[in-house]
Amino acid sequence: FALAALDYSWRGTGHVRGGIGVLATELCRAIERAGGAVRFRRRVRCVEPDDDGGWWVHTLGESVRARRLIANQVPRALDATIAAGVPRASRLARLAERLDDGWGACMLYLELDPDERDVPHHLQLVRDPARALVEGNHVFVSTSGAQDGERAAQRPGRTATMSTHVPLRRLRALPEAERGAYVREVQRAMRETLVRLAPEVDARVRRALPASPRTFERFTGRTHGVVGGTPRRVGLRQYLDVSNPPVADGLWMVGDTVFPGQSAYAAALGGARTAERALASMPSGAPRA
Image (cartoon, rainbow, N blue to C red):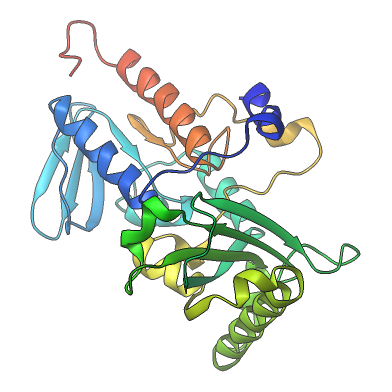
């Protein structure tokens, strides 16, 4: 993984044609081709262990039994989902506390007039290198290409996403009535950074749709809208959980909270390794599917 990360400087970033939703759809199809089932609109209310070492997953519409359970949730969301009284590993609370010092994201989703460039491209914009790379001073812009033109509401057109990190502790420390103004100020700073450093993109903006940590919490279930995985600090103690042990008997976490962290590649690598551990924990002779 480290070698692949270093190689980004030469091979560049990848682009999924049609956006991250296409990647999610293909992952669902892969599960179904492997004999699995994918259920939508079934928010999980509670998970609890059964007497045979498996788990019951209770949703708003049904209950499903799993021999092993792998949860793609951030720690606080998972802790709130596990039934009261079920023993948890202490690392679940530790990870939750570390994420409290993590990041949320303010976003601007842009619809653009087309230009002569027909390939997707990405911009890293830093208005003032002497300031922290948050709150609109640093903005990442990802612009679609001509083959993604169907994503624009008015065609022909392009789309772009703009993102910047915001410290969640700072946001949550504000009174509820002031958080909206803080988010709007960050988004204003994002747009100013775009105007100063990429005016050719700003000139093509037809409309901008905002999003905030509250948006991420509502649509993805990530507590407080946390993004970016567990903040990494200097020191080997940050990597004590590299093996991703279970957080309860027969229950594992996946996603950007566990090693190796964020990005589609990192999450896939961690997920594959976790699946291997879950299969290896099955009793001898148990079905492997």
